[in-house]
Length: 242
Length: 202
Ligand SMILES: [Fe+2]
Image 1 (cartoon, rainbow over the protein chains, first blue to last red):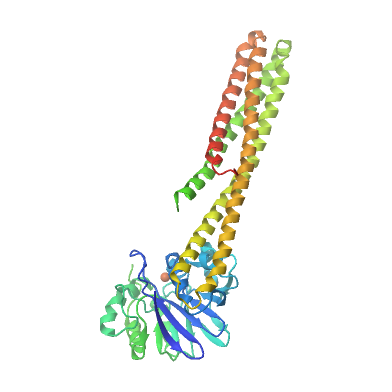
Image 2: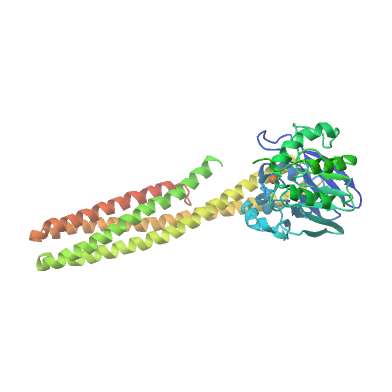
């Protein structure tokens, strides 16, 4: 599992991905952690297959007992089907996930972990002194989904938005935006159902100060590429499956 | 899923299916008993010896149905236990893998506690499963016992029927159907026991 530190301040952000031992037929995904002095938040913990390499990778940054919080942007298996395993490994943890999906996500196994439902209009979660804004991203692509914005690190973990499918071992940051666009187009057009929802999200996100846009699949966007992405997404017609 | 877990799932699932067949047959016996009672009543003195037998058959059928109902509840618990054991074993195996993959990681040692904990829970599940299987085998033995008793009664019924004059045929048919039903119950329960016996406490 490749680890990339993407923010280093009083707290840290680390991106995990490009797992070289992943079976070929499951899609590659990015996981993130927010590490504070005594706690660790795991964003998009990933699928069952990914549990062992992911847990092993996290152990480079935090001991098991300090993994106190998990976040799932939506209900899909590549995001959170590992829950049943985290549930047996962590003795004192919370899962922050959409309220709407609680009855669904619990199918993955959630007995010892506390499910903290996120209301439709989002909220703020605190990991020690770090405040994270949970921003609604409904219908992008899930009918109920959320992104995580850290105003100090200026990172937006954007779940499915900005995702692309890459060859194994691809770099973690977009280097040529015009080339990268082609890896995103079909996914966004086919997976995102609503132009109206897209518009509402862009209006909200344009007001945030973002250095890194970090999606769940593919590469992250840095600096000017963040604005390029928002402009591109703004002009894209989505919901093309019908 | 490894082949041992697979066969454990199959063994537990087969109990429910074998027992639902036993239930049908036990209800047949109960019906045969009611039928026999009516015939014996009409036969009057000629079937005097047959009357207490019909009550006995009916009792036996009722008890078998009750036993099987209890066993079914138990089998469901056993199924849940199997699911849980599967889940616990899968987790334990993954945790061990984490231990291997994390060699050299700064906090690798912190995985020891979850690994030990998972192993304990998994072993508890395995022990509980063995205990429950042993108990279930005991309950199945009780059903077999009933089936054997029913066959003895069926044999007696035949003798009594032979003295029932014109009712001979219908009473013999009753004895025949009880015997057949008892035979089926015996076979089905025996299959359950064989499937489970490898998991019992040794
Ligand atoms: Fe998804």
